[in-house]
Length: 93
Image 1: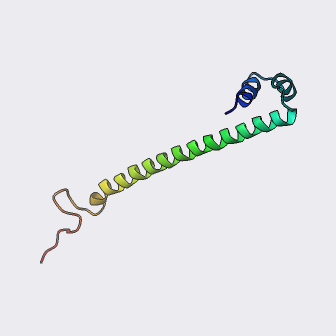
Image 2: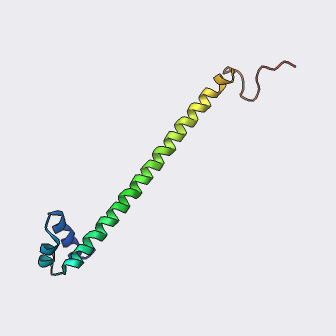
Image 3: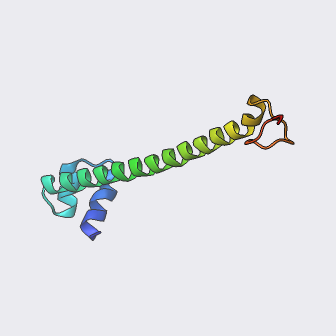
């Protein structure tokens, strides 16, 4: 990132208006506004990407927990004990 862009973003973080930033850095007000807007859009995209990744991980963890709970409950729902395998119930031949 160029020095001008860094300076623009720094001054914007301090709360200066686009016009004052433009005067301090030597750019037009529209250029300053474009730099700030592009930065804000990129920041939001990065944040939403991180949030989506976090949600995906959380959803995966929730799925794994729910799946494990179903597996551990399955034998009792079928009326099987720990001594029996899932595939074979008490069968008399």
